[in-house]
Image (cartoon, rainbow, N blue to C red; front, top):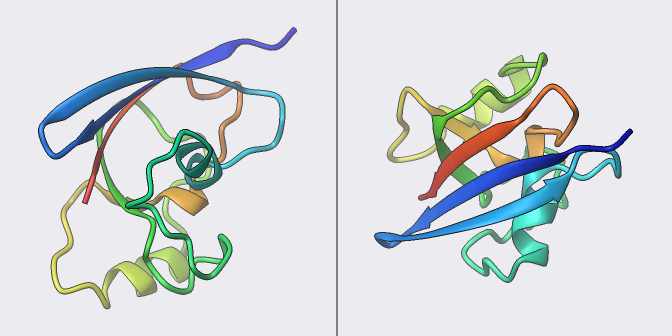
Length: 105
């Protein structure tokens, strides 16, 4: 049975809460774009090539995958990266995630 994931988004000091289904195969980037967060460009279409979907994960887990080598390499190209930086296209919204709090970079 599908559950919803609580996602809190901080953008320029403003905080919004959303619920996302965990069973439709979306990644966080796709969800953010669908909720009109235009700061998330996703120019490469979610292939971890451009970093235009960079976010900071403030709370919650991001599933079992963690950061793979490709994502780490792209994050290293950014002028500013944080210990909690992730590419939102690489965070799959699955039943392994219950709550997630992120900040748009």
